[in-house]
Length: 432
Ligand code: EPZ
Image (tube, rainbow, N blue to C red; front, side, top):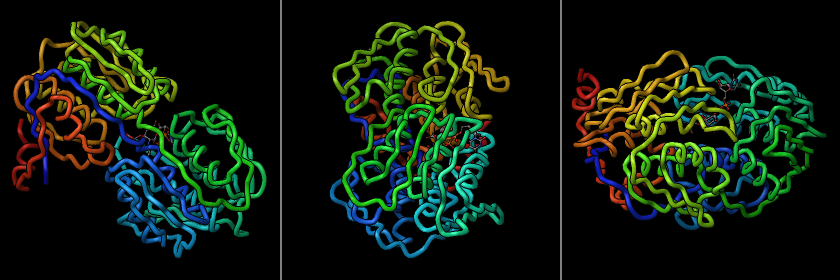
């Protein structure tokens, strides 16, 4: 087991380069399974969720060649199997995209029910409904999703999503790409990674219009061929570094971002007294004065992202006054609050609402990451706190942040990874 040790209280200065978007990469890699021919994919983030998916794909018969640190050639022309081993598939949320991709190309898929962060209930009923509308028979039992197109091929359909689900939108889009006829998804999710997956598919020969709006039209094509594609920068990774600067003070150039994707986060940080200046694909984030309180409700894009909710709570913990956070997407995304309290944060949670009374300062303490973004938020709180903090269970954080330690130390933080004997890991959790 490993943990992070953070000596906090240092302002941050310098530049940080943002990696490719995790939630786009985990849609695009399964999409490559549908392509006959080699795809060159650039700007792939080096994170454990990507490694897990690549391992699964290689076991299915994909040829993966590393071109350089962020670029890979992936050839899925000869896929030998459509069944994902249980232990591999359940480790990652995005394994559900393997259903749409394999079902769309081969007419069947057997994929374990997905794992990933525990954020309250994470049903996949909308995925099932969408795939069923495309003509698939979908059964869920024994920990698996079994999906089959009775005649080997799916057909286009008109699908209305009750909730603008990111996962269901991408999964239906994947399955419909090689279906016969036209599919229309209404109330589709609009997140930047939806557009990125659609752009990837189109650059391989798909016919998808409207991604990024709430109506996506997919005209089925016979096959996808190889091509080249570069994944967009990670909105949430960029937002996390913006939150680091907001919490610690200083001035950092956050490079390789799409400023438009960042507006929902930028606007809130500005309300809190953080300066954000745009310079091409760079955001210059500066904070010298005190942080001001604000209220935030998380919403689907272009609203404030739920995947930034814990990080912004870390920032608001030392803002002047009382802030109200409302979680508008997930049932339970406040599991980090108990850990923040160890640092002296004052947060009360009632259902989907958290009331944060800003305290003058946080004091370092041990914390245990309970999911990816909560873990990132604990790192931010530790960086802002006086003294030494520790964050254990860092496997959650490594699922989604490339080289977090290197990037933070590069802007003046003092954070390192240490090995922990197993007994110590359990005792940290039991403190208090
Ligand atoms: C994606 O999860 C992201 N994961 C999540 O990011 C992100 O929090 C979420 O979208 C919302 O933006 C990936 O892209 C791999 P949803 P997803 O389907 O697709 C309900 C991170 O930290 N719902 O948009 O699973 C659901 O319960 C992760 O990077 C149903 O009811 O989210 C939730 O309340 C965590 N039935 C809402 O919709 C369904 O069939 C939105 O979920 C599907 C979803």
